[in-house]
Length: 372
Ligand code: IPM
Ligand code: MN
Image (cartoon, rainbow, N blue to C red):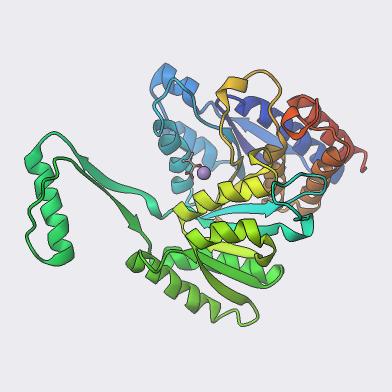
């Protein structure tokens, strides 16, 4: 028995998680395990009702689970940032889910916008660091008082140049990016482990030429970890360049490891080359703790309740969840089910089909149950 939390969240969240749960339960039936689903009412609705983002009760409840299945967050009635930071990022940080695993894989039958690229050309993993970098939330913004702004600017300049600088700035803001040797090392280790099981190639994506303190440390750690994996081929790419290579030569990549913010950006690009956000899953992983699996797309409030959203990213995230809790065979069957729904054209409108969210879930569940 696996105890799995479900956080449906906002917008299309409940519908896509319903479809995912149907599929994962079917996988359990076929491979002889049960999932005990535990519902958590976390999201914008509750926030609007009670002002609560994540309560202590939520956290203690989640801590009793083996894994978390997460829908989507975001609601037009809440100012951007509040829910994302107060719930999604708070969960990633609380459970120290330091790996954000995002497979970029073009499935058979899916159309990629890249001309002449086939499934064998687009098949890599992005391992995004998930708890450091510019996501640590250390920053400040000074408005109004010119005196305060000026003092901050002076302090920052004197840290940088050791001189007192006059400035005309009336407002100032800064944000700190933070990388620790330990934080970089654990995620880079994970990336090399994955590379070793795959095609034995690992690429660091950074910007060490300009942001040389923060990503200089990142590169140094990457190099020292690489020393322990002599059979893995390594490479460095700057983040601006990698956006070209993902488009021009995606076949070059096997495992890509990158700090948090660059990982956020390049995985949206990755999602597009594998057929769109409707097909992009992600896992927030703590190998020694509780991990959380989600589609990387948002809550699409305008489609809420219409039963038309594409559930495949969520179902694929469910496959990552199953793999994470030790049900590898079931995970493979789920991915195979996704592939057959695509090949059969049993997909939602965004993928050229005419099926509803629930009917895609039901169809894949049936395939899995019958071992097709
Ligand atoms: C993602 C999202 C989040 C992120 C937002 C919603 C906080 O864009 O999971 O990629 O920036 O990590
Ligand atoms: Mn993102």
